[in-house]
Amino acid sequence: MKRPLEVVRTPTDLLEHAQGEVARRLEDLFGDADERTTALETLQRIIADVRSALDGTADGSIGADGSRRSRPGPLAHRGAEPLFSALMLEVLEHARGLPSPVAALDVMTAIESIRSSHLGRSGRDLSESLRTPDAFQLLVDVAHDFRSPLTSILFLAETLRDGHSGTVTEVQRSQLGLMYSAALGLASIASDIMDLARGERDLIDPEPEPYALVEVYSSVERLVRPVVEEKALELRIVVPEIAQVRGHPHAVSRVLLNLTTNALKFTDAGVVEIGAILRPRGMIRFYVRDTGRGIPEQRHSELFQAFKKRIGPDAEGHFFSGSGVGLSIARRLVRAMGSDLFFETADHEGTHFWFDLPTSPPSRT
Picture (cartoon, rainbow, N blue to C red):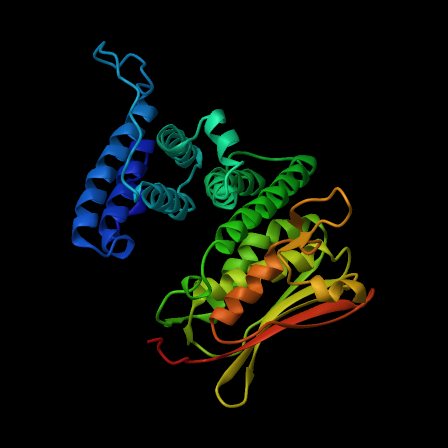
């Protein structure tokens, strides 16, 4: 039973609430019993450090009793990062039910501060790592480091924009919309880079699960709504009258979000429509279509490439392709679910992406 939100009034209340929820989920995060025991000890240490940060007694400052607190040493447990991420997500999940975002922002700032102190790298380490074969893994780690603070920026921008911290002018609302759009784009890139390092079978959960289509589309709509309003576009959502399907809701949401943000990016006027259509033989088609500028034919062959090789006598290495990483990850996710991603496009007439999935796929063995 989750702790009632009405008793969460201070940053400490919210931190304790998040700790309790993460502790209950340790079995999901760590399959091995010994790992869970170590993770629980690590979680308790993280919470103690975050509490000190909230109290202003971290990093060697003076505590309320006059004693000096020493800066915490690094956490060696390999599960520390998932614990930090889980705590941040729990705070974000419950922050929307609070009358003011201040407590949530304080807790997220403290969590990120302690996470950086435990898991951060020195500039020398970074410079040396960039010269090794593990440079791509370093890029993945940096992307992971970026995602938590970007998520905090998204939450803050949305909260301020919606007037939860006081009245905002139309100019301020527009500026916060731009801030949200930029942070959403960066957070999406960070997530995509992290997924580039994962094997295809690791991109989705092993077993399909029941989920509501309307909830998947509502979550995508909520994330992109500030971008839609800032660009003065029309967002249409078409969901069939079917209560639940079975599959991989997180992967479907990621694909739809990547396709939708891409559509919004290249649509300056008109409509972006996201939806699903029931197909014969127990299939369902997920799609995103827009009235944007379309994709030039010369770019079709590279559309799903995450990287392109530099060309020229002095060129070395690779760079992100013109379509970015999002479409590459979207196709990998769709293929991991046993389908493929298709598109139709015409210059200045828009683009249509779609993929078909069974409403109840078989379990993976």
